[in-house]
Length: 80
Image (cartoon, rainbow, N blue to C red; front, side, top):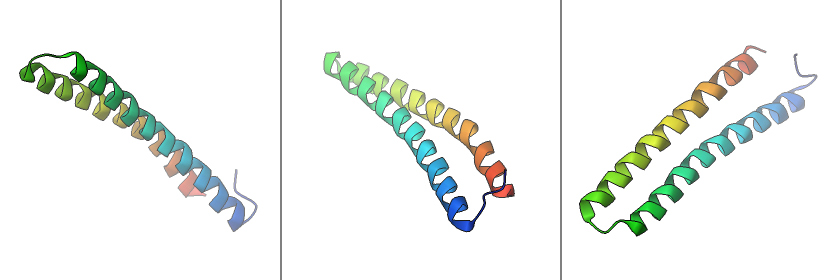
């Protein structure tokens, strides 16, 4: 569907960007919160490093999921 005007186009693009940003923010927040909670429980420094690495991996995977989900939508939108 082609937007009726450039104002509609900009509004639709802003909405798409906002929803994508929310998904990326959620990925960051969930992994950071999980890391913080697990680190507080860990006693030894090596365990803390392991937790950080695990949560960083989860963050990169969730961010990648968001990009794979939203990039096609942006590309499709750009075709119009």
